[in-house]
Image (cartoon, rainbow, N blue to C red; front, side):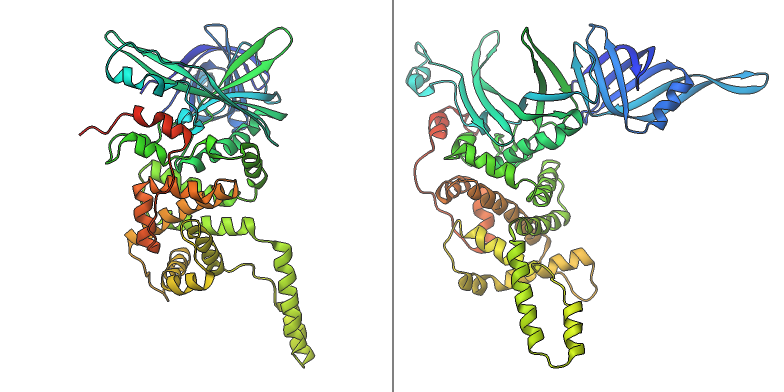
Length: 499
């Protein structure tokens, strides 16, 4: 794998002017490894004492500046000489790590604020759902290798949200080889925030965007290229930001060509930005509820990372259970719940005669919150209702046994109890975790405005989801309706699976 490398002169360390040679290389986790040569011991100790708050300015050989933030010392090696038989440090070589850097024409500080970002994400052209070519116009000519004329234009979606303005752009891309010429398309996303943010806030703000896309595809989505845009009256400056993502992914696993389906079949299972009937309303809903859903989203992200790294353990099941709890807490009406609890508590106290008993209940009976069994019933009932209309009574009757097993095993693996034994085998645990993760997508996307019909349609084109929801809940999914616009345009032009 290609590793980006830089070299130059360190001109400033933590506001201290200095001049010494250094090299920087990005490792496999997209972290910067900075090696500073022959630095005086006082500077080396300053770097060590500052822990992970070091700011270093590297003037590159091309006269650009690489501004490195939040660097911490991995190793410092000192050279020593003896002066009158007393050891004395002379110089040091220091190796530091960082995941936050700006490559630009000027020097930046951690106090700088930025408002406009340009970035590319995993399979972003697919997730946006716009095609820059009118491919169907020349489909017959392409198949017959005749004169080919394919109309093209850049496609653009612009939305003003409570976070800021989002622009999604898709444009043509070409590949030239000695004996062939291929066309495709690429993308970029612009985010113009309402309020400028510090460099330390980049990750938290941009993660809201990548988490939104991870819901659309059910996989981990990363920012693979990030630029900072500064505009003034005279010119526009674009600076490269490095190190945002530790696990870059360029292509979604769903879109690979190694399975039983053609790529166009797989593509239909992925939700697109264009699926939302009101994109502004959908994104505002997401940004407004992101903090409430944060714990659920963290559990969801852990499942995605395990799947991406091909890690299969019981921790996936526990993360799925945390996902249910996080989702349930996000939507619980606390004021109403407290009101109902107080009312019930007063009714119980009113039935008691002894004043000591009344005082005992008054002081000792505290609101426990929603029980996990209630949370899991509500979650699965609401989730599978997207695929099949079912009453709460019928749900409890049909799935009482599996719900009890899920609750029991959650308690077993969470508390390591000796009093209970696991009820589900490992494969069942993994199936339930996978279904739980997919139902989370269904629930949140439905809340954001995507209709049940389209949700069913896209999930019906995922053979894995079809199989899982039948194995766990005995629900058969059916495909109704025609292809959405983007999928219909692109259907014939995805590569078929090789036989």
